[in-house]
Image (cartoon, rainbow, N blue to C red; front, side):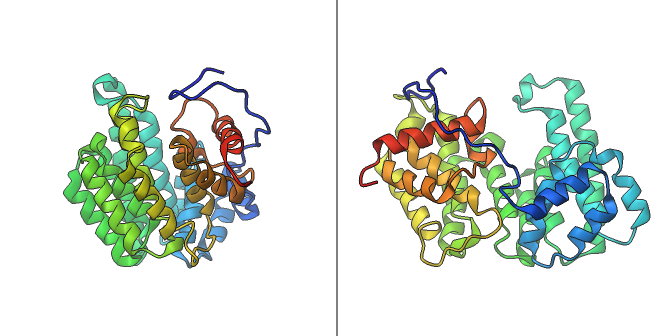
Length: 328
């Protein structure tokens, strides 16, 4: 295995098995229903969810399934007054659009890819607008419209308006915050300062268990990558600066290390991203505490900052932390 970001080679031990459901049998059942194109079962599953955070959490599993656009119209035709088929179809179409575009910079993206991207985004926008019309009180479709608008180049002002619509319905909606924060990054037309300011404000005011303090970590990791993550590069200097390290620890104190922190659906992402951030900054004990909480529960993000399989990167980091932490 080749080294990366200046860290020494070693073959990881005890590589966990990746489980996208993180051991949640309800999520596994929903994924199975989606794979079988059983929209009735999906409708029955989603229709009883009252908590908007729970709805968003399970919607995320729906958007990751392949082939949804091939059968979602059957559900729409059968349940034209329900917002759910429009929400699932629209949110999936946003992700489908970005997959069609690819991850290359605009200058390296083919015209044919842009045409696919634009066509899918228009479909997503239409479906999400119909979802909002059928359930004006739900924030989920508004959250999905933020990356849809980013793809359509509608700008920061429109992204903020859509975020405000979501937040008006659910103040600490995690995914709405994540989407707006993403648009505030320099690579999407914002700046490092804008993204970090938004993240720190959310972390300072949100409940400990909301997951929003992780936006601070994401801000610093994105600046690290953008400015160069290797030793001697500006990104490396930024991530390892006393101010950044203090900010990372403050974010952990407001969330995963806060006495009022409770494990919500998706809590594993919080601990994974702090584990990575503390690992790459040689905060061995702090990272080890996160790995202790996680066991083998790997989330794809943030380990997809690196090439290769996330489970191997997770195991590699955990091994190095274990060798270097003290008092364990």
